[in-house]
Image (cartoon, rainbow, N blue to C red; front, side, top):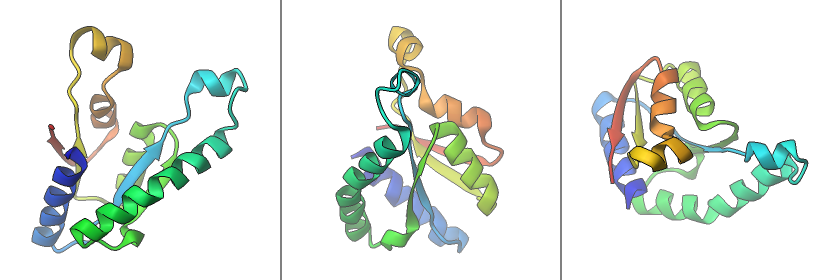
Length: 128
């Protein structure tokens, strides 16, 4: 549901601004597993990206967005998104936020906050 809300808002903004919509997702390899050599980071990311293909295909069709607009990159979410936004000169980044609080936020972290610290552009954060 959150992905659909994000895509509706992002597509609407892109149309209003007259810019090309680009969607990016990051595949973050669990550091502990990689450090202990329990997973091959490249294979892990490749498998995760392959698993996302059907979802991407479905979202692209549902929102009438070309599949070529979707990009998957390996790396920490905050670096992947901020790096791509800087590279393409993004006017605005639209992202979803679950908004964890308290103990959950401390244990699991808050991805949206990490991304916000690295971005140098406007942001539209959408809650579920």
